[in-house]
Structures are given as C-alpha cells and as structure tokens.
Image (tube, rainbow, N blue to C red; front, side, top):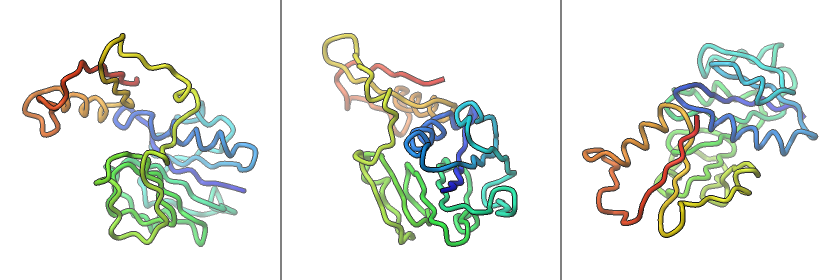
Length: 196
C-alpha cells in the first residue's frame, strides 16, 4: 500500500501536525510505504523511510509520475489557516483522510478530529465519515506513558504544541483583554508546557 501524507511543519505551525502523522506512520510502517508532501520540507528526520517532495501551495499538487502513481490513500494534516482546495488534493478515487482540529469546510472521505471541543466538530458541507472527540485523538505512545505533575497539590497542567500559533494561544489565555482570557474561570494554579 502506498500512502501520500500531506503535512506541514515550520516555525509558525510548529511540529504538532507532523508529529501526529508520525504516530500514524509508526503504526502503518510495516504495511505501507509513504510519500511525504509539504510546503516547507525538512521532514526527513521525522519520516526517514519516506520519499519526500515539496510543493508551492496546497491545491497545486501535480499528481503525476513523481508521486501520484499508485497512491492508495491520501492522509492530510494541514493547519486550518492554510487555504486548501480539498478537491485538488484528492487523488483520483483513492480515499482522502483528513486529520483536523477545527471543523468547517473540509471535504474528505474520512475526517478524524480528536479535539474535545464540540463546536470544533461541525462539518456542515461534508459527507465524510466523521470520527470526532477525545477518543479519536492521535497521540504518541511516549506521550501517553509520561507522568505529568503540577508540582503537587491542585493545579491544571496544559501541554501545548510548538510554534508561533501555540505561543499566541497561550498568551491569549493568560493576558487580560484577550477574547479567550481565563479571568476568574479557573481557581487553581496553571502550568504550561510549550514545545519548541
């Protein structure tokens, strides 16, 4: 089986999408081979056994001889702030599986959204098979095995991805005036881990 993996990782979006895809690749490693297609490149270390290709923009994929020949499925984990023409990234009749976090205008055969926020599970224009909610979160085994401790006592530990977007999200939680500021809603100490 040959899978085209469309994923992005850079200083803006961080590594979370690529790391999430690496968990899937790890599970399918003996069953499938992979093409990794990205805008930024540089994912060879995370996917050392895959063939790598760079493109100029999402929706401008030339499914030609290079990597389109014999693709059995396309898995896309593209951050929501990239404009994507879902019809253009689909390869012939191969299924398109999208890993998503926000909902909206995503057109695919299967959508997996592991967020626990119900408002992010709205796919009004999609006829996809939906797998939404925390039970469908794609998490690496080593993350699940980690022991997380807020230093004893009551507290809330929030582990956030990496990149500028994650940093801005944390600042929105802790700075007054932000639309998502915690304010008086949480009465326990907070501890944030931000990836790098």
